[in-house]
Length: 252
Ligand SMILES: [Fe+2]
Image (cartoon, helix red, strand yellow):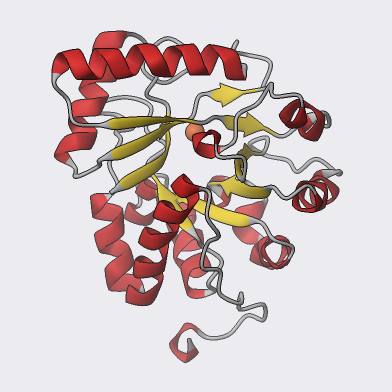
């Protein structure tokens, strides 16, 4: 399995605080069946020094540490980019990393409780530049979790949605779980990832969420697994038409 969102690199952000913790996270991921992880330190949020060059250096060092520890986990470059007005310019200047440095997908995060007024324009601009934005965990966003029509409209404009795995299991609260499940039914979920931050409290695991997804909607589960492969390779994803109008769930 592929985990596309994980704060596993040591000492860069609020994820693994040191190498020992990062290696423990890697053990947890491997035990869960994860073979590939995209390291996604928070970037451009004004808190951490996580420009593309720093992440490249950290990934190289962590790969060496994993090999030394004998852990069979492939680590790829990435970042979780805080939305900001200069985002496109910073990507073009090479200061921010695309997923797996493949030049196609960007993992974005919004402020926790608000949506910048320029966000829809930003999504559109990214698409015109040949980049596909992936929005991380809208089911946890104070406004978006209750505004799925807005998410569906962005999806129709080329954005992809990535849920946090534990949201599907209730680990992010009742409202996040309900929102996540409704998003799956409305076919506006394209990816699921751990957003792991630590070995135990926010662990890098996705298997249980995948099993929950299988029970909820087997077709979505299969599509979401395949999309992770595509995103890592920088290939196009399978994106179904979103269900825009609210319908009763048993009609889906
Ligand atoms: Fe994250």
